Image (cartoon, rainbow, N blue to C red; front, side, top):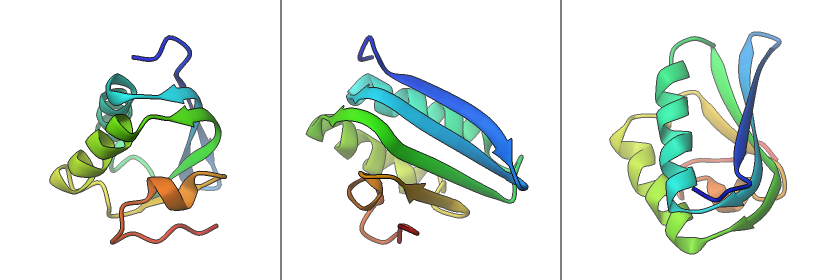
Amino acid sequence: MASNFKIFIRRHNGSLQFKLMGDFDGSSAFELINTLNAYYGRGAKMVVNTEGLSAIHPFGLGVFQKNYYRNKLSRGLAFTGKYGDTFAPQKSKSPG
């Protein structure tokens, strides 16, 4: 995992907010997938905020997107921030 990658989690208005910070690589992708799986079903909606990411490595993005559908996380998950559109797999829409 990128040494500076962190995930901050909080509840807000009935949803779970995941704020990503640092560099996103392959190990970071697996950490995010595992974290989302652990919290899946605990909130009506899960929102991943990408605003705090400094860099997204193509391999990490690919690992995340490949596992995104395999783990059925696409239901109830939205992406926001400057990398929201990049992060969201092609079949998903980002709310801005």
